[in-house]
Length: 293
Image (cartoon, rainbow, N blue to C red; front, side, top):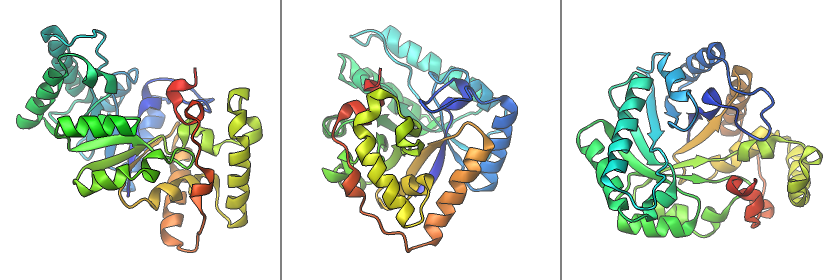
């Protein structure tokens, strides 16, 4: 598993535990410089992440691979005008990022692939790939049913999925194994669940109180074997052999250094043993950030 740098915090105030707000340009420069030094070369961004793409483009990205995403399509039927907007936004992303081509392009909103005319969206993404301005195309999904359907209907190179200590759905049902067997590049997002897995359980808002019993036991078990919360979250992802990239988001350089220190420790110490299956949560109101409203 390799680490990829998520950049939503570079363009907007994001995350339930984020008390710092949007990351400053100077801090972003430091984060990118340190990331490159440490071998993190994949950046994950999107037009919907505020001015993240422009901020990234203010730095040299020659040594990075960049993934962006399609904009949300407002219409229920995808028309020619929507595809023209997709293309316009894509080229604006290239301009904002100050690059000639991208490593990858994800469909950001899965439901766009279920609209009438979704084949036009796929064909446009395939066109980008055939013209060499995108190396890989994929879709960002949430549920097993979306993968089963979309990967039967279209040929994708990669997929982005939510996976973490609490959200083990796509591990337990064998989805990741199926994707890996097909040669699909797998990117794990929400590995810290927007910081929920790094927060003291007693400090959680009332809407998360139902998960306290899971977190309290989990944190106690981590303490008994000498693992930090960051190490515990990373170790779970690192044990899943099918995952190619884990997307991490940081607000500052210190957080990145802490994550990388934890990442190196779990890779160099084979003594950590913990049964993560004990902490799986099935309540989607807890594990799906879309339902946190």
